[in-house]
Image (cartoon, rainbow, N blue to C red; front, side, top):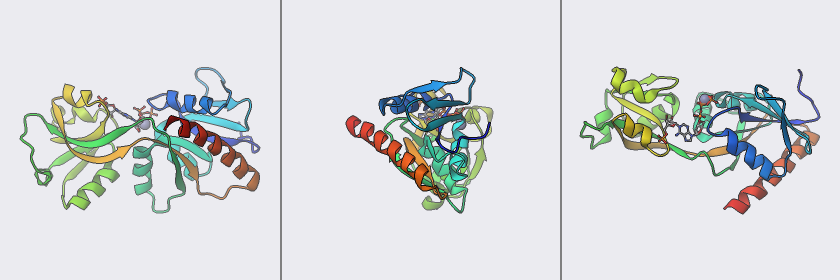
Length: 223
Ligand code: PRT
Ligand code: ZN
C-alpha cells in the first residue's frame, strides 16, 4: 500500500515501553485513532490528516531521516545512538514529551570495589549503545573494549562476555537482580518528538505544524 500523499505520517513504537504513552499523548491532543486490527502496522486519525506507522523503535530515526515519516516519537537514547552513526543528520528534535525517562549507566559487579572511572581502562564493556558509550569514554580519556549486544546486556558479566555493562536503567531493579551496581551516568533520556529535515511541501508543513501545536498544548498542561 503506497502512502497517502495528502496525509502526514508519524512513526510510533508498535509495542513496547513507549507505545501506550505515545498513543495517549495523541489522544490527549484530540485525535481519534483507529487501528486496523491487532497485527496492523498502521493506524489512522479519523479527525486529522495523520497516519501512524507502528514500527520497532530502532527503525524510527531511519524512517524520519528518509522522510518516509515526517514525524516520529522515540527515546533520545535511540535518536542519539543513530545520529552519532550518521555524518549527515536529517532529523531534528522538536519537543520533549515527559515520559519514557531512563538513564544509560555503566554498571559494575557488586563484588567489585569500584571507586574511579579509570578502573574501566582496558576492560570489556557490553552495551546496545556503542556510539554513545564510545563518546563518553573518549571524553573521559578511557580506552576500553566495547562489546555490542542487541539485548540481555545485564547477563554479559555472568556469561563472561564482559566485566562491565552500559545499559538503560529506570528503577534499578534489573541491575540489582543481576548483582550489578551503577557506577557512572552516561546519558539521560526521555521520549521526544522528532521531525524530518528533508524538504516538506507547504501543505504538509501546515499539517505538521498543526499537530505539533496541539501536542505542545498537551505538554504545557502537564508541566
Ligand atoms: O521492539 P522494540 O525494538 O520496538 O522495543 P525495545 O525492546 O528495543 O524497547 P523497549 O520497549 O524496551 O524500550 C523503548 C524505550 O523506552 C527505550 O529506548 C528507552 O527510551 C525507554 N525506556 C525507559 C527504557 C527503560 N525505561 C528501561 N528501563 N528502555 C529499556 N529499559 C530496560 C533496560 O534496558 C533494562 O533491561 O529495562 C531494564 C531496566 O529497568 P529497571 O526498571 O529494572 O531499571
Ligand atoms: Zn528496539
